[in-house]
Length: 88
Image (cartoon, rainbow, N blue to C red; front, side, top):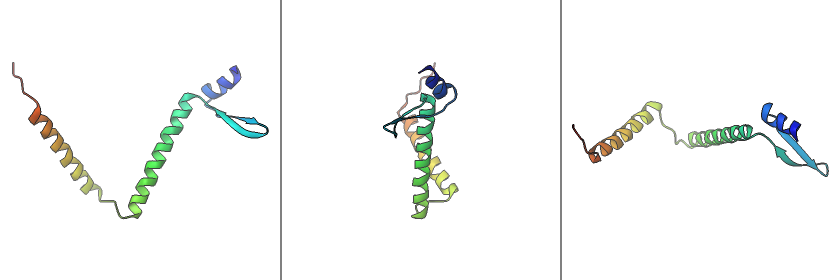
């Protein structure tokens, strides 16, 4: 078990275990697992983005930036209007 732990954690290897000559389980370090999840999430986002582009749901960067800036400013204005100013 010590050697498996060393391979999984220190070397970042993924160890596949077999049962009845068939792949059955996988052992990996938690950092490797977290990295794989992050990559899967990124790839999923990329696939969604590509599908949206193919469907014509994209917009020029400058237009998107202006909309984003406008929304941010609206939220900032709303926050500032609800915040009491204290002078001391």
